[in-house]
Image 1: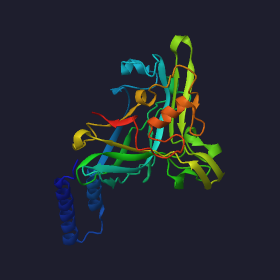
Image 2 (image 1 turned 30 degrees about the vertical axis):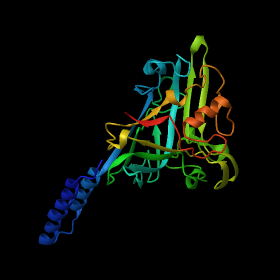
Image 3 (image 1 turned 135 degrees about the horizontal axis):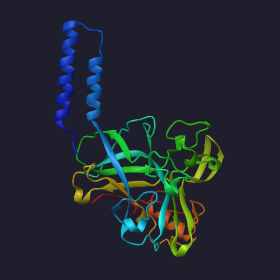
Length: 306
């Protein structure tokens, strides 16, 4: 993905035309110039799509049995349904073909993303998601268009420390979602993934909530020994240029829950600092070292569409 030269030409043309108009007629109204710059800015932005999938198959959503989408059992369950799926990301970077990264400039929209944090929301408030969710979803990160040969994306799951322990009782979007707050830890749930299984006629509810843990202090002065902000890097195969619209970032729930025996009550409420053996597997799939809460550099739940 490269910064096309025609965009520079368009920007130059707009500045030239409106610049001459202002010089020739000495107009005080710069609205035309500003409008032109807005157009150029819009052309320079990139939308990075995310998809919630199962075993690489699209179509995972509230009310749909996941193994019917995946074509295989999800960790032994043929009756697994999503109840919630949301997570924050920050420190977003583009990966270049030489292995280096360049910061992605986020485009604030007043709802889903600020200049530093994005909330990705896959649930739509229907069916099993009705109790926790809302009808609105967001599956896109919006950034400025980078220069160079981009082969992938890097980001951290979670909210940065400077924003995670805010003292305001009413936060602005996207930090105003009650279901994404951990009031007793004075922070946010970085990643929320809830589900149920209905195998053998028995319903078992489970949940994975990721956030900073083992915290002490009072907001905003809080210290957490388990930060739990994994770094995720996804790149195209064989180092080829990445086209986000054709190769979205996949969040694979089958890979997240693989071998965790989801149809039993073994996982329960899975959280860092309170992780049994099955829960620790899920934490590991997000790219964390369960015992320390630091990023491992290895994950399986995220990848680019092949």
